[in-house]
Amino acid sequence: MGQFTSKLQKKRYYALKVSFWRWVFWGRKRWVLLADFGYETFNKHGQKVEIIAPAGMITDGGTVPRIIWWYVKPGYRKFFPAYVIHDVMRKNQVKYTRQFADDTFLEMLLALGAKKDKALNMYFAVSKW
Image (cartoon, rainbow, N blue to C red; front, top):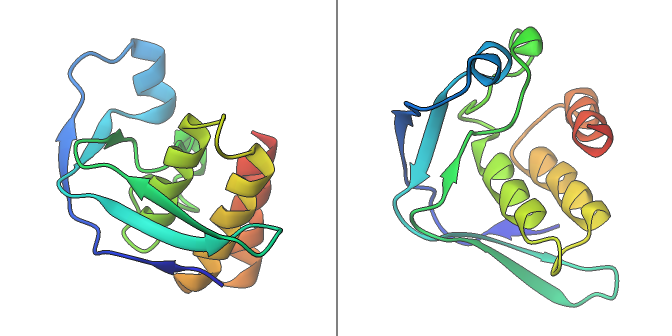
């Protein structure tokens, strides 16, 4: 099981230039990281992997369609660290495979206290989306 290596510091703002359909389906809330944020885990070979989200990174706090915001909202404080690290891993597809990013996302959700059924639902949605 991995661990977060620093405290998440973020500031919320609203994206001004968002297409109408993006606003309808995803909203326009965004967050910017105020300091580097990291997570350490192990790959399938047992080697330690450190994932760093750099200061200044902009995230939507989890690309969650508006229709399921009743279940989990983007930027939900409890799972926000997992959203950020997953975003970093998906943006850097050369370094991290999709499977590793999704598996690490599940690991982080469970570490953050998500109930197993909710964590698995979120993992399934992320891995199939």
